[in-house]
Length: 171
Length: 257
Ligand SMILES: Nc1ncnc2c1ncn2[C@@H]1O[C@H](COP(=O)(O)OP(=O)(O)OP(=O)(O)O)[C@@H](O)[C@H]1O
Ligand SMILES: [Mg+2]
Image (cartoon, rainbow over all chains, first blue to last red; front, top):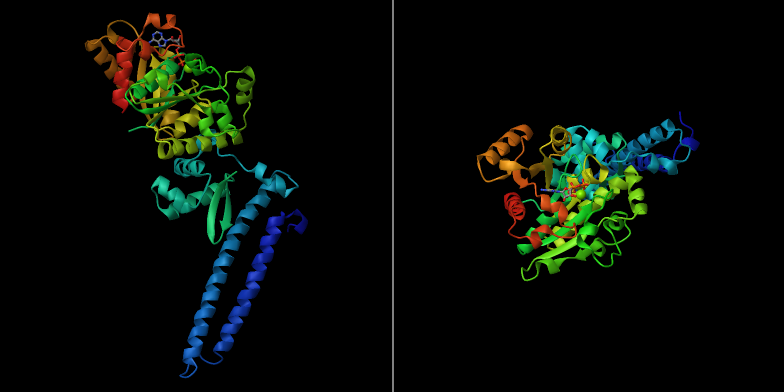
């Protein structure tokens, strides 16, 4: 297990965030259970009031889940960052960006065809979401999303989250 | 219709710079708005061809992120006055220091340069209303040339009828242009004898080459001994509009349009 000291600042932060979110989900689910103490079928009388509550609670759960999903995505990136840093025996997380592989034309030439198309589109945009890349390549958004994630895993692009959106960025 | 055209070749001295310059001039003389860019950072030539009195910013500076794109444009529209056309030129820095500096650029710099080239393309065609951008490149497989090819809509490949040249060119098309799905067209330069003439020999040459390269041959330029006599500073098509060499380049201009 990695010691906290070896983790880059960002990673520890993300772990805390995820912990925090899980705690909040717990609270929300607890609230949900006390709204329906006995059965799932609400009885007349309490129905009107509870429906609104449930809606609100479910919305909150949904929001929280999205955030967890985001945080997990970040963790995924951070994990590969850590691996890269450790592999290159680089102590400081700050050096990570320099350790990232560069998507120059020679590298583009070496990529498999399907990834090259995505990578060229990203070279053009600098940073982009899967749908922006899809607009250029004419392929499905989901396909581009998968290719962009592959490029992130290979260390050519950085995956970042911005307001519930996933962005991919060149080194 | 290709707007951004990279003029490239496998070997040096095939006639890229002459073709690029004259093609740019010809489009401008047709009333088009044209930018000619020297991206042969290893051996800049357009600086000699145009002799602008005072050059403050070179295209190198734009790629370094040191100035705006338009700061690197120099106006040569006086060559095409009364045609409504516009000819701007962006030069490569010919100083030894700049050439050396370009040789030791990092991959990261090359990647940023590619992005700046894409940004230039958007700016030229979407905002500044250019019709064409013609890029003169270094021969062979070099960073700046590959960058130019990746952003361009068309790679215009100049060959001469010399065996090693053709083999290298064929490999380059397969291993570079095709991989980037870049459209390429071929110009045969310095052709001597009847193959350069209007007869059936020329047609045969074109057919043979087309089979060999599997790409369209868009021009056969005659070898013009006088060409070396004329100083580089002369834009050939401007001074000799009715010369067969000029006519042959005009045919290329029409074919790729
Ligand atoms: N059709 C031609 N007939 C005779 N000479 C020619 C012809 N085309 C080009 N040349 C001569 O060949 C030389 C090289 O031309 P040019 O500089 O245009 O080639 P290039 O491909 O740009 O070279 P480099 O690879 O060094 O940049 C020049 O001296 C030019 O005058
Ligand atoms: Mg040249």
